[in-house]
Image 1 (cartoon, helix red, strand yellow):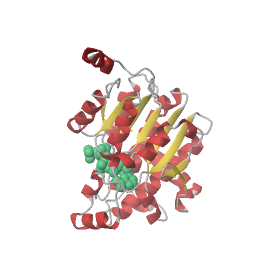
Image 2 (image 1 turned 90 degrees about the vertical axis):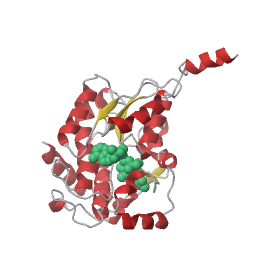
Image 3 (image 1 turned 120 degrees about the horizontal axis):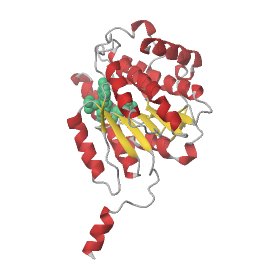
Image 4 (image 1 turned 120 degrees about the vertical axis):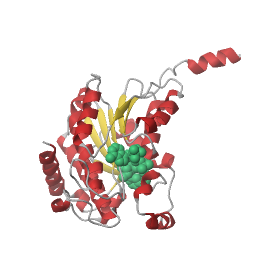
Length: 294
Ligand SMILES: NC(=O)c1ccc[n+]([C@@H]2O[C@H](COP(=O)([O-])OP(=O)(O)OC[C@H]3O[C@@H](n4cnc5c(N)ncnc54)[C@H](OP(=O)(O)O)[C@@H]3O)[C@@H](O)[C@H]2O)c1
């Protein structure tokens, strides 16, 4: 009986819902991205982990290896603040010759200050510009999948700003906390996802922007130390597993297949702020982002 159970444990489950699907998750070594990557792998997807550090990604790889029937999850080096690294990451994936059914633009930082290696305000450069370029470069593989989804983790924080300060995006972070700049970057995530959805209409590739909730992840580590207790006190934070629920629903629920370009929160479509619904602003952001990445 024990040997039968041991044999059963090594056999791949017969019909995992995402068997045959290929996914790429950015920032998959911790927080919400780690849960998303693990759950996609648990459901049978082959998941590429696009992260900064091989060492920090190894734990997630081991976690995925231990799942019954899961495919090994390769690491793709990715530093989103550096266009050369983003280009290399996309090329390493494209070199596999695989279709890409699911791209999860998850990685992000909040409260970090400065300029990225590619010369953008830190939050905007990492959270928006890096993902803009990565998505552009991966589009051939997404189109090749026939039906594909791009889930971009935005935030309710986009409501705290009413526009994109284009004139300051190529300067180091101006605020002392980096929080206003984070909010701009999350508005950019939202506008990007909506504009991409419009541009990909009819292609089979659908886009979803998601607010995951206020999550007790590592993201608060870069917020200036004196502010951290205030953040925890002001908001009841949910767990990373809870925070991954809406992104995972957008990534996998067959009922959501046609619902491209929307903003999701608490498992349902939500109304973005007026700036988040501004199509002219989305087009302006797209044009700038395209000019800056060419
Ligand atoms: N936590 C929340 O309450 C909350 C709320 C709304 C939206 N979000 C969004 O949810 C997403 C995931 O956040 P989280 O809470 O899970 O944060 P987290 O635990 O801090 O994880 C962030 C991930 O992004 C990666 N990352 C940061 N900077 C990077 C860079 N320059 N290049 C490549 N990867 C980079 C980190 O890698 P390292 O480990 O190497 O630093 C890490 O894997 C973010 O987009 C965030 O804005 C979070």
